[in-house]
Length: 171
Length: 397
Picture 1 (tube, rainbow over the protein chains, first blue to last red):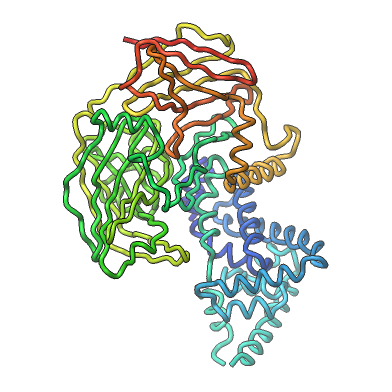
Picture 2 (cartoon, chains in turn purple, cyan; picture 1 turned 180 degrees about the vertical axis):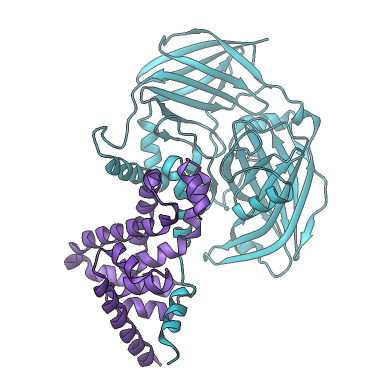
């Protein structure tokens, strides 16, 4: 990945494209932790990619690319979420229905994954995906989310307990 | 409960449903940062070179052909191609079907020049496929190359990468050049006859090479029914076509300006091929942008994307309104015999506007005059922003 980042910084569009394709699933999953609708997820990821493309030359450490782009994505997701929140009083039902329709239409929706998203608060979802999927340390997560390390540790611990209950309850 | 950490990791790493629209957005996004390419259900669009900021392409892309319409013209609604065919400019290929997984494919007719590559496929199905229930057929990963390993059309990156690897070619996906042609077009079912379907592919480009043969590779066919159910059939169809001398020894006619009633026009080129006539005109004209110049970058990009999305989902009504308000209108080319030729009214036409350096407007158009009816002197008539313009040209010997 670092080689691709280097080439992308030199203006190699193909290298940048390959970088994005390499992490497309991760970006999707992270966006899904915050956003319900597929349109919003696509918008967040799209804006993230454009911003990354425009600013990649400013990235100092090549090995930091993925963390950097995840940070951008989390911020974009938060912006869109806040923007949507203003409309929730009117459109709440529509958003919920839309999400349900997406579930029904999914060809191979993973039930356990969907349960985690539905039943965990966002603040727990985001830390577990960064910790378990992206394998960031507590320190790195605290830098990405701009929260104290102690808060990260707390949230991971509580998330583990909640998930255990969810999974046991499901069975 | 097994180790909870392992369970969480397993769940988060598991496959989840990712909408195809997301995947397509990812594949296209880099090009949206600078350029744009999209594949719709019935179109293959060319990569549009950004001269400066924007390209507004007005093409016949909305000209969708229903499978129930009777297709009068051979390849599409393009009189230029019809005339060429009437004058014998067509390959009638007698090769046998290439059969794989119970389906036979062959290419029975081809027309090719610098701007046009039209292919008529015959697909023969076994009894398991009910052909009258087919709404659309896509040759999902079609790759067309020629005897010099130039790629003329490719819609699938995996096939592209494999082809380049097998042939030790140093091409990069979407980085088109003289060996990897930037082509686009459309495809549709022309007719269904018992278990056989005639599928037409019309491709256009600025510079199809003078190929002596074509190689077509297809590994995936998608059949879409009227109920939108999709059936994917995998196979190995490898088709070779030798092209006639008329195709690869073709010569175009080039024209130079004798007079023009608009002194701000620069006539970049007028080229007459075996199937069409292409003109390109540049004039001083500041661009109409979807954003304000003093908007910040983020706003500019957002408005650009909004316009792009709107253009992508243009309806026939939107298109008609756009055509009514366009700067160049009522164009035709007239030969010395007084015959008039109009913009090619088909989805393989190549026409549009682009702004250049925020100062110039570049306009190009394709007419259905060809070498079989072009004369030494021709006249282009058009209306530019309400004023009639006449351009007299003569053939360069």
